[in-house]
Every structure is written in C-alpha cells, then in structure tokens.
Length: 206
Image (tube, rainbow, N blue to C red; front, side, top):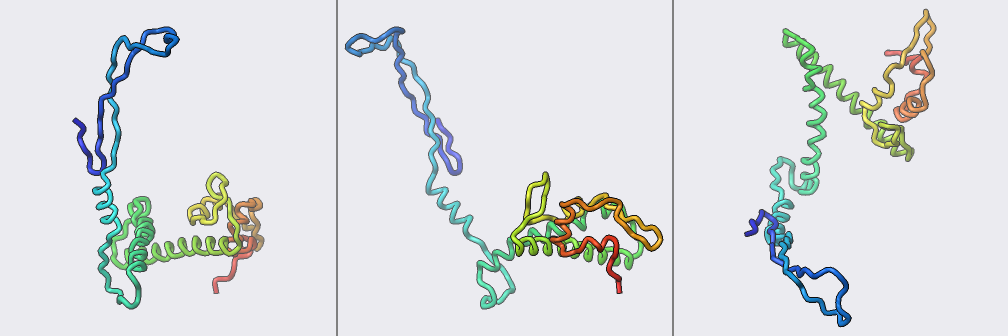
C-alpha cells in the first residue's frame, strides 16, 4: 500500500505484460501469449489542496514594525526586513575568529577603541564595494573577477586579492613601483576613481 507524503501521494497499479514466443507472428498478425508477466506501475501525484494551502502560508507574512503606516507600505517594510541578512553578513567580519582570537585587550577603553577601528574598517570596506559597483554600472562596463570572468559587482575581498604583492620602493625622496600594475589592477583603480600615481605620490593627509 502506498504511503502518502505531505504534498504528494504514490499511486501504484499492477499491469499485465504478455510474453510471446520467439519468431515472427503468423500471417494474420495474431500472436498468442505463452505466459503473462505482472509489473508494478508507480505514479507520483500532487496533493493539490495541500500544496495550495502551503502556497498561501508561504505568501503570508506577519509584520511588526514601529514605522508609521503612512510612511511605508507593507511591501517596503518586508523588503527592508529581508535585506537584513546583508547587515548580519557584515558583522560576521567582526566576529571572525582570526581577528577576535588573535587579540587580547584587558582594559575596557582599549576594547572600545578596537571596536571603533573595526567598524570604521568595515565602513571603508563596504564603501569601496559601493563605489566600484556604482562606477561600473554608470560606465556600463566590468572588471575581471574570479577566473578572469567579467563582473559588474566586484567585492572588496576581490579588490584586496587583486592588489596582493604590490610593492612601493622608497629610496630617499624617490618612490616607484616594484613592477608596473597589471591591466586588471588598473581596471580596479579606474572603478575606484583612484589615479595610479597615488602609489608613488600619495595625497597629503592634511
């Protein structure tokens, strides 16, 4: 007996399959079976009422918000709520074991200072992503991504990985790159609106 699932049921039937002798049939085309085999035929059927109830449940969201009703409709509130994962993903950077476990600060004021530094770093991290993506979208262009696949949504991690190994040699008042920047690195600098000369002639801090 077929056991039904939550949204489907299995319908099984027995089919007869005649078995004939070898060789060509008679001239009149009549073939007499020498035995009868039986096989199981299984068919998966959807439970339409159960699926429809599930669809209605999936489309129902209870929204509790302190936003005034006239300030935003239900769709905007729901969209904002669903975008919270991006914020949680950002703060996972601050909870990284390689960052937190590598530091030991005893005084509370130093812990607060470290938290401020990490938050500012995270702000700069996301600001670089936003600037690159906005510029690429406006210019309708891309930069080389992982495996040199073009992308219009580069990440800050991809940016830092692209510039790994870049060295600036300082000899007295002279500064020069250890080797010229690659076309990929130049494309990222254009997306950031940073001239290549900034490696050699950094902008003054004040």
